[in-house]
Image (cartoon, rainbow, N blue to C red; front, side):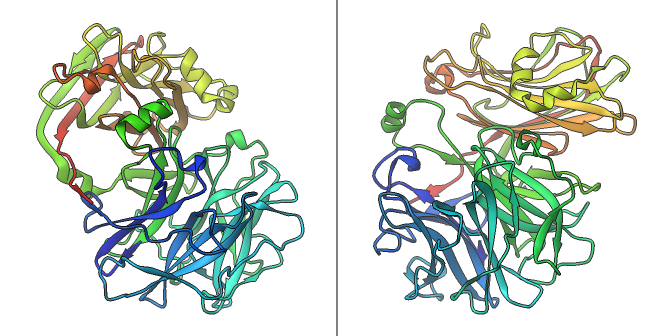
Length: 516
């Protein structure tokens, strides 16, 4: 949340050691603060499991600014070894403290219990940020498994402390068994201005319901029907494999908030380690957060777009520029002059011709990872693969590649974006998938396909087509621990059609300041 000039990030933290939080019941709310979303101060935990209402862990939740100046946290408490879950409230002990270091739990906790017919009390968690309903009362949604299906249970309150369940969910679906890590927010088509859910939502706005589904953050776009007090998706897809994803890589439990300082909505997420638990113990930490991103709705109202917040540019240094490059089949262009372990790279690819595109098979949408494995960067295509090779060893035994392919569907062009980690490291025992996602693109109007990739050592975060597809990845090349070797980076094309690069810009990135 943003409050009185300070950004606050709260997150699941395991004080018992550098293990995945899911392996511990002693989960607390970590707390860090910043004035610019880049440089951070880590504080003492905001909430710890010390009451019967959260004694087995303080799990996820949300912060809401009530009445303009009262921050309130609502979070899931685990009450026993069977992981039965309830919802609790915490308030800042001293609002004049700019860092809000101490929080006090409400005396009437738990404010929401699981006594709902058909509700699995062990699958009842992650309350959303609050919003104002049609009757002027506060609303929140809580993720749940209800009668064996995923549901966003709806609750209302006058004072944000005493809650009553609405007799129907905000939304439910038989496409999944459980909704977790919920988020619900309003967006305006074609506008990157964020909307404050505690204020009046303008006419023409859409709403987004985001939920965690099998460790993938998926979302639906629709309308908030004020008469029914319910979310109504524009499109209902029975097969959840076809639901659009916030990010097609290692990106989960994402959360947005309204940044009143800059009038934008910001999202970020947890990304897990892909090495072993002993590796995590050795390095002393497990799990990182993505770069914060601005998130908004595309002009056609069908897809969310994301882009790193502007403040990330403050870390840039040593800019290099290349213009009017031409990449023929098999070409590699060596990108030199930057720190390739910590870099920000922007490339525009322009297609000389769109008539060589291979036909699109809609069945690929059910398993884009499989298609990225089969149609990898070594497989020649009509248009593509073309993209960026990074963190590469001299002999290319190690490398990570982000690439595009262009396909012609019946109505338009479909762009496949892949982030292939399968040769990212010679270290055995790592999880090295090939991630991928499709986006629709009107190549008749716009011939340029953009790629931006942020590299922060083991983190590779890529944004394709102006943020239409985003892929967060974790890689562990030997070069990360080899101080004598600077990994190599290339722009490449391995498709039959020539690809032009009207602009390639890249920067080394400074380390952000972190203090504890």
